[in-house]
Image 1 (cartoon, rainbow, N blue to C red):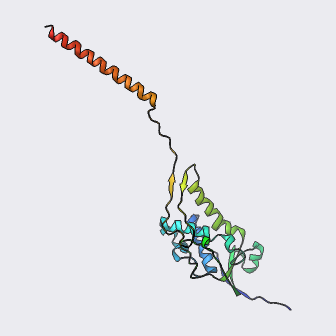
Image 2 (cartoon, helix red, strand yellow; image 1 turned 135 degrees about the horizontal axis):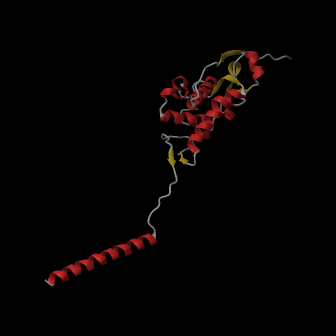
Image 3 (tube, helix red, strand yellow; image 1 turned 90 degrees about the horizontal axis):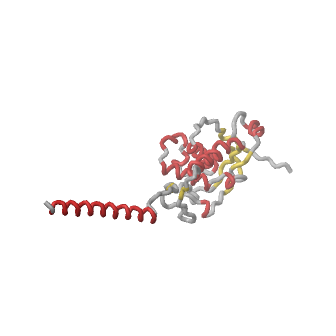
Length: 219
């Protein structure tokens, strides 16, 4: 018995993006939401207006991208596809979306929840995305590496307050870099030397004062 699977190519992304890391991650979240409509809040996937992203929006994009990592969606909404195969579907693209007749449900645990992700509103996978590895490198792995290099690199220590569970990331996250510094001050030996110096100066002034008083009384 021969089983026939019907599908329609619904989109093929040929969009020109900048090198802005948050725009790339926002574009990644846009594609996640294309597969699971309503999953990602609109401000986080508004990649075309990336130059208006506030610092808070950038933080939400970063943490949503961590939670909606490719491995979570691989085999359910995302499919790593050799570039020659993509060429057969739509020449010149690195990813494309297709509609399948069979629907799936994306199951997210409490640990996978993050602010900006509507896990209670939309979890049905309506589309599949076929992508070449180069596409995922450009729009996920490289931007994530660049952001984390800026946050955690350069010898600074970055403290992030991250919470997991039902009420994940309830408070706005702010980066709090703590740089180790060395403050040089007076030690015990230095204090002793200063004390001796002051005593000597006071003794000299006292001797000069006593000598002056004796000289005045002799006249």
